Image (cartoon, rainbow, N blue to C red; front, side):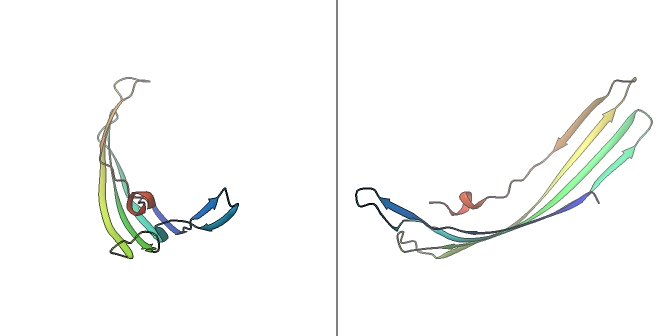
Length: 125
């Protein structure tokens, strides 16, 4: 196994309007008030030497993603007060390293990718 990763974010949001002509603050419009974000992943990796000149490399990564959003309906009258995204994705890579003559190296790599949505992707209006 190459590695493990864990991320936890707990985000709170508020809004404030400043009335310049009255020089005072009041409650402002905001939609997203609380977010819990969990991201977990496991990253196995493997190297295989075919011979002295050729090496194969393979890797994988599984991402688990959970985001829970709570919304305020004071200023925006949404038909909902919460939202949850619970998802996972498996990504991988495969590479070939070829060393024809010293110091030359020719390599190629093919891979897939995944980006978990962040707070603004899922909860901003």
